[in-house]
Image (cartoon, rainbow, N blue to C red; front, top):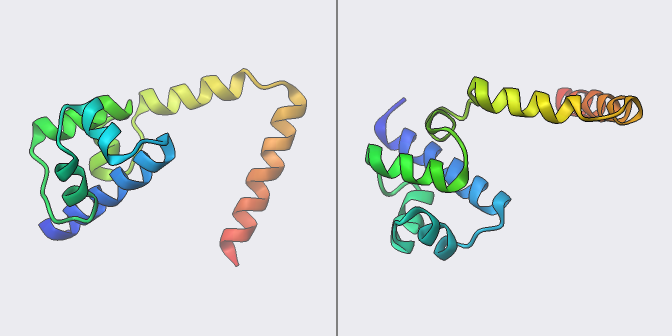
Length: 109
C-alpha cells in the first residue's frame, strides 16, 4: 500500500471512530492534545501521522495503535468483546446469533 493510501485509510478509520464515539473534531483535538486542523487534514488523508500522534489519538479514542494503522483489533480488544458476550444471557445470545446470521446473509448478496 502506498503512503498516500495508508494516510487515507488511517484517516477514514479516525473519522469513523470519532463519529462513532460522538466527538466533534474539536472534542477529539482536546482529548488528544492535538489541533482541530490536525483532525481536519488527517481525516481526509492529507496529513501523514507521526508515531507520537498515532499514540495520542489511540489513547484519546481508547483503541490500539494497531487498530488505527491496520483496522484490525488486537487480542485485548477481542478479549473485551468476549467479556461483553459472556455477560449476555441465553436469550440475548440467541438473538445476537440471529442478527449475526442475518448480517452475514445480507453481506453475501
